[in-house]
Image (cartoon, rainbow, N blue to C red):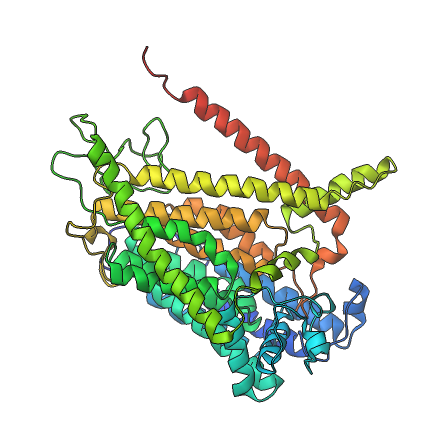
Length: 571
């Protein structure tokens, strides 16, 4: 019998394939095994460099490390996947995710050596060097040997707020170990902030919080990479989710817009990828109201996709079109009202973002030099990035004819151009959906408060639920496109779209396309931070390129089918 959230009526999935208790303790065992693998062969400061896979096997404790890592990763991912339709309750999801995090909190840096770069960048800033101009080696950081060689001479690609936090961590820690502990505390704070926001965001979009909370907090990428790996994505993501929740709670109010903008600006000042969310945050900020009597809203129907041009509902289930039943069209003044609301909300929101960026830049005295560091993030070339994989395959094909086209930079540039078009298209599609009558109003009218975390999703108006879901889904898809088309992909990048898509996807059957890759991504990196993509360059690039071509073919076929079924206007 499907389980529903207390106080709600939304069923969410069939009988669990694995008992909840079994999943809980299987995941806990996996987290313990990963922690053991970390202490035996994790990303410790004095770990020897790995140039071949044989180095991993021949290292001290090599076979036990690999055995613990593989068993732990499979157990953790399997336990998470088994309850992808939703945990028994939100409280159960919180407790289980927290239980899995406990052993990982005691682990050394796991799956990456980026935290040593963070510490050295903080050290450089506290000792008068500009981390946006010189690498940590040139700055004289005493822990440079722990930093991966590829990042020792590159400027910091992170925003001034994070450099400030890294510097404070170094000062508070008094040494490398203390700095690592302080940075992990910041990562845990980001995860906790996200945990506080997830139920509210899920309620706002009409998604069962027990499922959204489970999909995000219990994801192995969160525990292994954001917490044990101490990645700054945790803090940035927590700030993004808190900013979006503030906007949903009190949309259209100037003070709220400034606060939300400041939170989002701080997220950008940690990691630049957060900027992708800003245009969709302006849509979240639009105030909404229930449709007037005699007007057709969403009717409380599921809305996991954007409306089609033929008028089908957001979920492709019901034909609600946000239009008035009497067929009346909006006049020019009414059509301009949503535009005025968007410009007004966007201006206040932008003010908060710019204020946060300016404040952190002045506090550190670093300005915007971090933007130049973003260009160096593509120094790493791995087939896990689809455009990079395509470039590899083109180079391999050219080699067969005695040519070296050096296609990777071209493929990456083409992918960025496609990404720019996709981001504009996704935002426009979301904006078009929100401009339907009854969904967006001018700020002067009264707003409908969203449900509190303890209330059922049905307490919000269909219009408010649709507005939240459309905007959050657009942001999640935009982040997914950014992660897939970026020059570099690391497993923890997948947490960004996961968090937004988990709170915006109402149908549990439609979560598999973004949940399955997250489950598999955790197997790409060894405990010491060695990426297996380094040892599978040719076969991985060919497989990824084949996947890209298959997805492109399916997308083209679906677009043609939609165009063929679209009703033609009467002449």
